[in-house]
Length: 399
Image (spheres, rainbow, N blue to C red):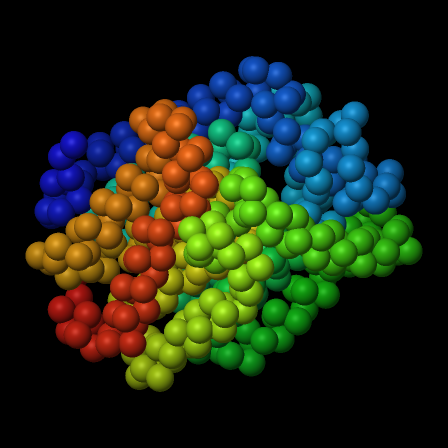
């Protein structure tokens, strides 16, 4: 396989951008179509999402099992029911396909809003594409989550703190992950506005479901949601012990390789948080685009590789971070940088495809949470580069 298109400057005209845009959306539509055409059981995640809206309006506990409707449990916040509502009221076949395309569009929109040069926009889209298909095969919400985090940064850069805070608050009240967007407070020219808008949007989205449900039910729902998240964390640990689909994370990798199933997450989370905070010492670079993009990439990766809820389709968030990390690297690329990207392409993205035999996927990659390894390598490099940002900024490529 030839990776020269990644390692050299390429000239990208409107035609190539148009082609990759067409492929992005065509593959997205085909992917979701192929799943929904197999029947409702193949789009179980979408049925769970649809159930959030239906149970919200009928005032049924959002977090109980409904085996006649779907398997698995819902763990999304009540405001998610309003996001899925336009799709949930459609026939399953149409609603599911449009939901997948909507997620693909929102991530595409977020990437293009970064306003990178055409070469780098193309590269980010290409690196993300395989992982996007993995997420869409599971009709997941994760592309939307990745987009929310990216847009939270974009809107701070555009000095639209009200929109940045909206993305963070909505994302937090649906799937928690976008709370990492509060780090973009560092880059804001209007920090008080950022805080005040954040408080406003949290309150707004917290009560917004009242348009379709009752006050007492919504109040109880938040307690039920918290309880479900605590239970989900415990279930993830059990899944990790059995080599299951959950806890595909750095901590899960440690648990599965060492066989220490009671390994304390805090032993990794505290050092990780310290390392994420350490680059803040370089405050004079807060306005530098390379520094900002590198921090964005680290935060996107962090939300996944340190989460016990991470599973294979969640990695579109982390791979978006890997793609953004790649475009800020100096040329000529070092062997370490090249190797990190190739490892991410093969072990993180392509390992979920049919290019890898099921035996290898089941007994090695999933069994030891190895999908997290390349993203962790990129994360370590990214943290190191943020701490020593002067060298990278002084030799920054055209972004």
